[in-house]
Length: 238
Image 1 (cartoon, helix red, strand yellow):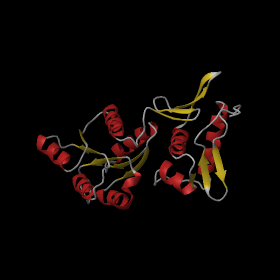
Image 2 (cartoon, helix red, strand yellow; image 1 turned 90 degrees about the vertical axis):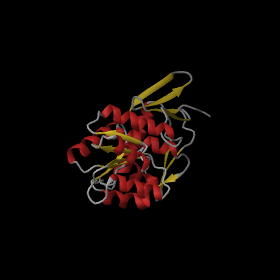
Image 3 (tube, helix red, strand yellow; image 1 turned 45 degrees about the vertical axis):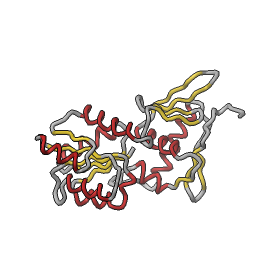
Image 4 (cartoon, one colour; image 1 turned 90 degrees about the horizontal axis):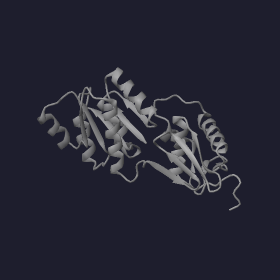
């Protein structure tokens, strides 16, 4: 899941980005309302959730939110602010915020709100995602391969492996280019090597092979990759 984080406090922004990354969210972090609007004006559909600070340089979080809603964007937005009066909360919610969280707050509460926003949309991540013999478990960062004879085999994934496999499993039987994968699985401000996607695909294939899955990721020369909509066991004759 991709999140746009708009927070001008460097320490808080870095801490939020780090904890969200640890929970398998891809995060684009910007430090001003103007910069955020440049991201959102043409690309708000790329995000699943946005987190806006209220007090931002150039363009406030409330102004940013109002612009977004004028475009009829349904993007779920969590408003972060030190403003704690009832009037402030009413302003934020009436401007289109889905949740209003007052600073200081606990990271556990923030993560719970994001999970609640996820549950509102059928497009966002469920507790598990299954395809063929594969099941992706969000609660423990693992992929599980189901074998009717041997039972279930579970392998831990890194955050990036988990995000990559989730993206493949949500887009089966489609040819997905390297650039599409970079835009969805890596945040925009990260400097990436030219072979980073190929390297992660190799690591993911190795993990899937370890738990008995036949390689479901097909390389399409010059175009990208295609993920099998019905992943099978390596020894399956079906």
